[in-house]
Each structure stands twice: as structure tokens, then as C-alpha cells.
Length: 248
Image (cartoon, rainbow, N blue to C red; front, top):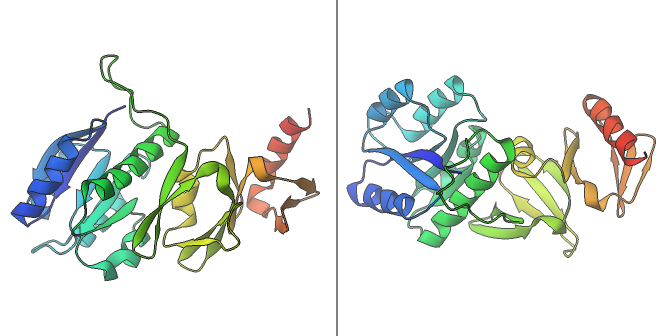
């Protein structure tokens, strides 16, 4: 699978580093790079890409303004954003436009690869990127995600996640091996898209559960360890269908 992408940054050195990182990542395919967000918008009006790496503070049209324009026009499953900026105070605003990740300058290739891997995992889940040609080596299937916790990216093994809980502008990710959940600045929608649908299910506006960690079910209440999670009205049909398959 190849993910088409563009890079946008008004600083020549930062843009050069960003394009270098993209080009050395085998599952990314750089379509174009821009030092001006208006030029990038003109390109996006003519051609669709899967992933946009963009700076936030740029003259004429900021990265956040461009993100809002793209967010209003795009099919949200086909195009995602990763911000690359020196200003951490924009993190919350970035997640409001459903940014897939947020790279804080100066970032290393390891940081970049973690964000790119999140994009690879996401597009693998939703299946909106066509498979690469047979000659293109496939990336190994990974069994983890990276979450932004404070100003670090934390690797989280999927089988450790018992459930995810909404908490204001954050999510709490509850893990089997930890007494306290990880608090990550992202949305439930983003977590729902990121987690594999054959292993996780959203059962309430405020809860996503790991199917592997369900201990028992009583009517419309799910027991995950000591946690009791009620199935929301919007999710009852989907959950009932799952239970019917589980009990046959």
C-alpha cells in the first residue's frame, strides 16, 4: 500500500527535511511540496491526496485555515492531516479538525515515522488506499498504535487496551497492565477510526471496548473487568448483531 502525500512549510530547511523524511519512508509517495499554502490549495482542488503534512504558521493562509478548508471539502476517510509545527499551543485546535497526528519541531525521523505509521495503520483499517503494485514490498502488519500523551508519543500494544473512554477534549485509554489510564489529546472519532474494527467496537458516545476483554454481558450492560459500560441507544442494533454472532 502506497499513501500519496504532499508537504507544506514556508521554511525552506523545514520543508527540505520533511520531504527527505517522506522520500525515505517506503510506504509514502510524495506528490508535491509547497512553501505556500495557497499554492497547495490550488493543487488540492485539482488532485486528491491521502495525507497532508503541513506547518501551521504560514503567511497569507495559515495551515489551520487550510485544514479547515480541506476538512470542509474532503471525504474524511480519504484525506488526513498531520501538523508539523514549533508551537504546541495549537495541539487542541489541530485535533478539532481531526488531525491524525501532531509533530512538534524539531522532530526526529523516529518521531516522523511514528506519525507516518499511524497514517499507514489508519488507511489500512478504512481501506481507502488502493494496494501497491505487486513489486512494491508490503509493510509488516503492526499490532500497536502511537498516542500523544502530554508531549510524548507513547507506544500502546493493542491487546493491552481494555476500553477507551471520552473525557472532555481527551480520551482515557485503559490498559490491562496499568492501574491508571493514559490521557491522550484526541477524539473518540479518531480512536474509532484508528482501532481495528474486528477487535474494537464503539458501544456508546463515550466508550469503545475491546471485544477480547469482554468478561460478560447482561442485557445492555457490558462488563470489562470492574467497569460496567451501558450500550448507548445509537449502538444497540450493532451490538445486538455482534452478540447474536457470538452466541451461535
